[in-house]
Image (cartoon, rainbow over all chains, first blue to last red; front, side, top):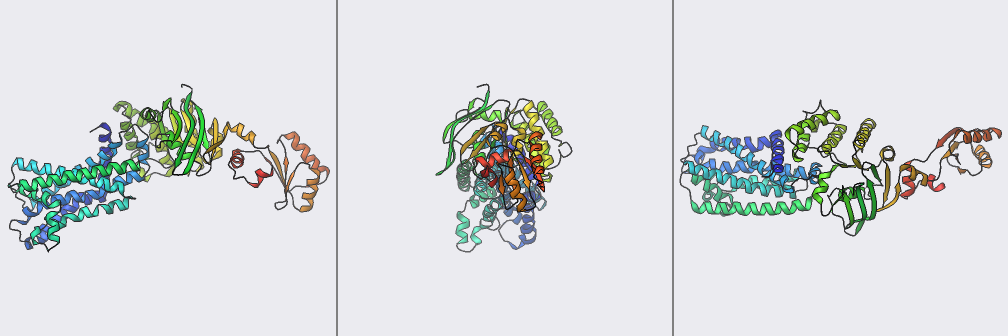
Length: 247
Length: 314
């Protein structure tokens, strides 16, 4: 990462940390949802294993998604407010603005997930993952966070105003519910079940679930990695094209 | 290219089929203030955008700080500072953090960076609010911070696009004082403004842009001379007196609606005394008496074709 990107990252991270809504959505909301599903509803679900063990990987993905709204909004604010013009007439690497947002988004995700896993342990989470499996989980999260961040940066750039940018990230927040995050896909109604089985989040969640159970599935992992690379590539190219048009 | 800070020749720019800049030429000597005037939509901001590398021109050549804007963009960017119409500050950061951001992006060392931040905060009277977020700043403070940010790294050429629009008279004067200080440091300033008084106060040379062309260029004094001379304005209580005065004062122009008479005059005491004596001789009393010298407003209105009745009457 260039010096300019590090400078931008520091700036973006301060933005996120100083906005109570961003902190709430990105860090506290996933924990609240965990309490809701595990503590309130958990006993009602019959998924074959302890519900906290089932739900934690899904909630980790959800935590990534909940951080995205803030990224979309702040990318768009950068474009619609005067500050971008200042960066443009300076000898600053153009991509640094975007890289800064992507890395800030990723760091927010990692903080949120660390907090979430901490709470999960308090609620009785007992994974049987080896150190190598844990590294796999971290790798999966970083890859997912990276892909989702590029897509969100593109959404933020394409939106007309910061408000609509926040809205553009909403589908990404809802999508985890239509995956195997909360309940297994085969318990869903027809139509939604097929959707849940084939949407990108399901293999990603199943990969993490497998790793945390100490029984990783290479089929899911390949699909998950392929999806992430695909999403990252589309997001990156779309973001770059929109960025060039806007600046 | 040592004497020219900005050299523009045959600059053209169109958006679709709408021509915004239709071949403009000007030259700004280093260490001077050049002011571009023009009505809204004349192409002032487009000119600034092209000169500051934000937009590519469709034709012509532009050299800024001796570098071609098309081929040596990086060198141009390293030499210039820009303060636009809307404060380009980061609202979620504090004043100090905003300046630090510039220090980091300009890659000043940490020791020098600290010194620059402190110095600018002091110079722009922002020390007290340095640790407050910019979202709590007033409009004037934002503009000051904006300009302070532009000065990080000591740019040789500074572009100020309507820097005082929306500022109260006191803040405007502070801004003017800062511009004069910069000039004393040898900085070249390219200023666009809607306030002709501002150009008159600050600029060494003024150019008037209208419908994509430069319709006049010169010192403020040169331009004022292009508009016919100063005059005395007399207002009377009735048409009878206006008639009488118009007969006596040859060469004057009357306005029956306002009951006023404009008499060409150089405004010197001697000619004024002659004028008043003549009125006295015929026992004509004027209700109001005022001397008018053309200001840049008159020049502007005359040149940009939005002429008031006053100008066409001459």
